Amino acid sequence: MSTANTKQPVSLLRSALTTIWAHPAILFPFCCIAFVQFLILEIIFFAPRYPLSAIFKPVIEKFEGPMFLHYPFNFIVFFKWAQSPWVQVPLFILIASFFVGMAVKTIDNINRGNRAGMGDIFRQTLGVYVHLAIAAVLMMAVMFFFSKLHVLVLQRAAGMGSTEGFYFLAQKGIILSAPYVNFLLSILVTALFAFMIPLIVIDKQNIFSAVRKNFQILSSSFWSMLLVILLPGLLYLPVMLLKANRQLLEAMPVPEMWVGVIVFGVVVGLFVDALQYTAITTYFLLRKEK
Image: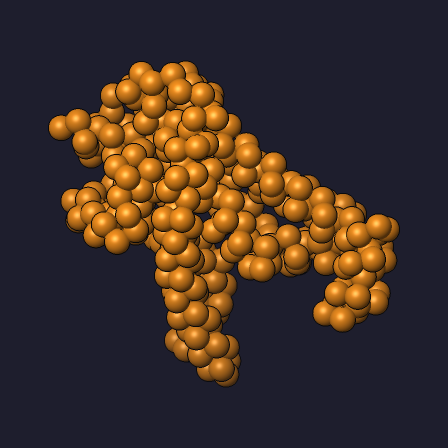
């Protein structure tokens, strides 16, 4: 693993890129996450069609309406369900937390010159899976709390009823900035729990010790980690803004392009997550060596 200045986010990210380029095995766990995402997307896409319609047709008719079983309205269901918290939250807690843990363990093995195969890494990560899942639940709970606060602010802004002056501008600013605030909240929550997975997977800490030590490390590295997570995250920002822009989506020539937006988001997210967690783990390991 290449060396990096632990105080310089750009240096850490450059080191992370070099490490991924030299050791593409780091991408394997993230590709597993993407594979599961694509599998879920495929199920949602074919939900209105036989044989999956036997299961999903009553659900779609009840919660969306009969018209959404047919083209082009079925793509509205696809776009909505693909981003639904009912899909994304379990995916993050049960699947992503485990495979990110595998990626962190892979980076640790590379740093120590350990040539353990993915089977061994899988078994080692499985041993701390419960703690990884609890850490993911904790992250989602904090994200849910911040999101609820943001919704309250949006509701208050929508109820202002101003048509001119400062309050009108404030109302418009709050509403129009909503996608950017959501993006920054996700960056903030990731930064707040940046070292949870390395502490659990590499140092074998239980969830309670991991939380305590995570914030101890963050006390001297929060702003660096925030930038390490923010800079790659900017690559995903256009995808997030596109998903939130209903007018632009409706202006697309064919609804099949909505599927392309979701798929492109999965691919971009794969590389963003890989870069972020490789940089975080690099910082964690370099800090341990000092």
